[in-house]
Image 1 (cartoon, helix red, strand yellow):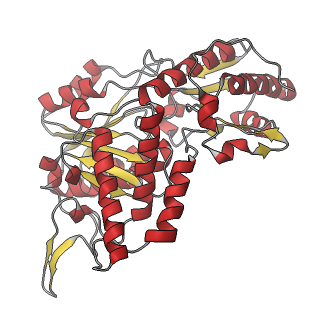
Image 2 (cartoon, helix red, strand yellow; image 1 turned 135 degrees about the vertical axis):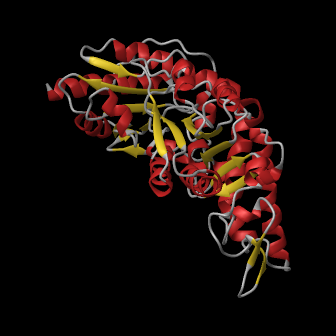
Length: 415
């Protein structure tokens, strides 16, 4: 049995919400599941599962194409989901919300469509050193394709970025800055509103990877003034295979489609094609309309839980876990920014991260190990990888106790 550790966390009723997540009731290797891999994907509440089941059982039909009743209902649900997302992120217009397969797909859409329209040989793209591969590799590919240059915005040993450094990187040929809202490895919450303000003074567009940011607090794209903001549904209690790219109308209207196919066209002849209006110009083929409905259900559910209260509770879990982990001899936390989301990456002296992760798994504790698709970030510290625990509002102080005790035991077993 795990030894309980004294803790003090606010009276947010996580146990009440845990009942909404069936998977949290299962066991792993005979132990209750302690799921601390929320940075990779979150679990799904009954409200989302029931929405998907209802759609398949009662509504399922292709959208925008049919005149029959089911197609009309399916289309209505899909466009209602778009409006739900618009309200959730406070986009100015529904047509600034594009449904994608996920954050990766949204970023690649911008890299291709924005890149084709606005990036030329000799231009520059800025990325931060803490980017997920999904917000790094597409820009490397664009620069290779266009003969542009990639410039890197470095972070310090605390995992923080300097605005002065960013200002020094920007020049007349800088076209776009790609920046994560929240680092999935360091937990750093970047000051996006300040970053966009500085970039816009220099006439630079800003692509924000919101895969982690969408879950760790309220997102208002107008307040952030982001030109593009991408996120995935599965990071915010929604289904996999669905995501959103928000883009300001002023950019989307000038960008060419990235993919061709059905629904993104106005007219088609053998000689030429004219394109549909926004947002359909960027939604070629059969969209994941059931995934969109599931995402809308997830956003409604999270709003009902209370975004601010949930985020504050997660921050208390972060503080408690940080305090307890730091008390373990030989353990070092990677990423200590002043503004940090509920993500902890750590290493133990003399213990490989994979060994820690495998032992924790046998104790029922699910964490992430490796470079977390942020190899340059991990390379910055000269590490082979880290162990990452990432929290959600359905986690509890008792689960933090389980994590800490399991880490202690892993150290004892490997040294």
